[in-house]
Image (cartoon, rainbow, N blue to C red; front, top):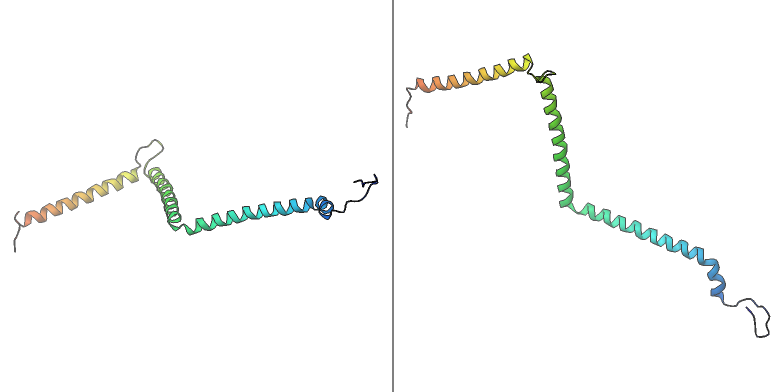
Length: 126
């Protein structure tokens, strides 16, 4: 800066000299403030999510349902692998179990019919 006589003089404005030196500090502080705002926004979002019990319960139910479906599918595949051979035909063990179930059901039906006919086919009223 020059004075009235044309000589160079130092600036007496304290804001002008310190402003140039403080510019990196101000930028750093502004960046820090912005980062803090972002972190605070994330924290508020997380707290809002934790306090939304209805959504958390719904999400948990969907997650449990999906897990159960995957396990059921796995069990079905395991069961199918156990009762069928590589060609998809029932194994002898599966056939014997199936035959036993059918025989058991037939026995239950026969016993039911025998007991019903032993009463004379009529119902007793009291």
